[in-house]
Amino acid sequence: MMTRREAALALAATLLLPFPTAYAQAVRTPKPGSAERKALMDALRVPIEKKLKRPVIFKVDVLKVQGNWAFLRGAPLQKNGKPMDYRGTVYAEAIKEGAFDDSVCALFKRERGKWKLVTHALGNTDVAWDTWDEDYGAPPAIFK
Image 1 (tube, rainbow, N blue to C red):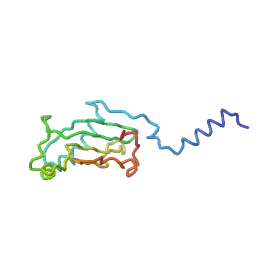
Image 2 (image 1 turned 60 degrees about the vertical axis):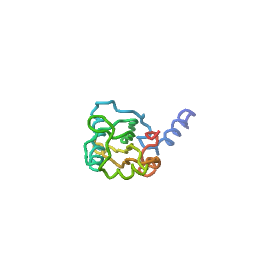
Image 3 (image 1 turned 120 degrees about the vertical axis):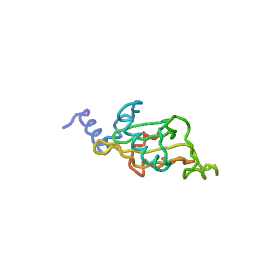
Image 4 (image 1 turned 30 degrees about the horizontal axis):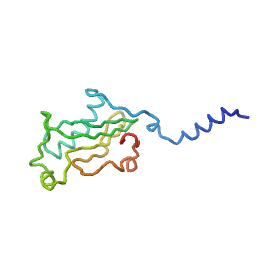
């Protein structure tokens, strides 16, 4: 026969078992200049530079990592740190129409030790990441 303490521990273990490890880990932000932060920025840089046809760096407003998931919210900048010049890009018309927000958001997943870009949005005027936790199985805490 189990004691009350043993029964409580067994119940707690049973209830926690279905939760993925990522949800049990703390949310953290990689430090500027760290290898992890650089890997995340580099994973996003490739598609953004391809869309804009110019080199970029990122102003990071939010960067959260939990387990093998990461979320970024920020803005693309020119290499010299000045705001991006979108003239001549696919976004020029949207800017003229007032349907462009100078922001970028991205969802990453670490696979086999490397950060991979899962999805991203550039210039959205609404909350692009609103359903990314449900759509991709990412932990909700990284979006808060």
